[in-house]
Every structure is written in structure tokens, then in C-alpha cells.
Length: 103
Image (cartoon, rainbow, N blue to C red; front, side, top):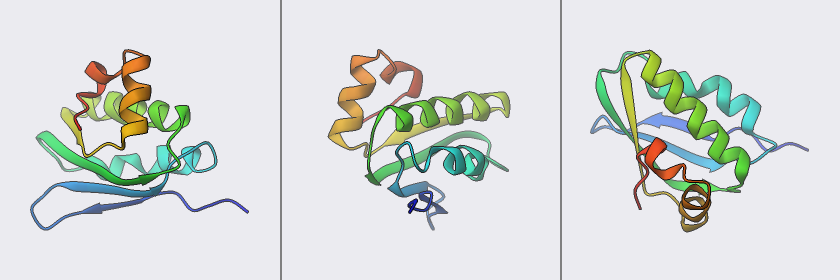
């Protein structure tokens, strides 16, 4: 049984939150739903990742794809609250600067 894609929601202060599983199983659906993060946005959108679980290399790939797609739409995504395992993976792959990822 496949876990559902992570929840993507807009917070009252305008930030976005991504929570739930985002591993290999959830990646295809999460990738497709990523436009919710930046559609209608302007400039920079902060995305809180503190609620993520099941972080693996697929998570990193999805975040990179979301970042690229948002940039094409004229929006910069800034990820905050990333789990320690995601930070470690992003640093290992030299992807942290591409994601503008912060603890």
C-alpha cells in the first residue's frame, strides 16, 4: 500500500507547508502537485518542510524539480525547517545552494 503524497497547504501568514511522507513512493504525485506551492505567487515563497517524514534521495529530486519549475514561473522557493536528514543529503550532493535550503 502506498502512502499518500504529502499535504501541501497555505498558512495564514502566506507561507506554504509541506508535511507527510515524501519518499520514493510519494514522489510522482508530489511532483505533480508541486505547482500549488507557487501558482499565483510572486517573488519569493517560503516553504516550511518541518513536517516532512520519509526523507530520501527522491525527496531531494522533487524539491529540485519544484525549485526549477517555480523559477520558470518567476517565483523563488525558499525552504525552511528541513529535517536534519534532508539537510545532510542536500549538503552531501551540493544541492543546498540550489534549493536555498535552511535549517
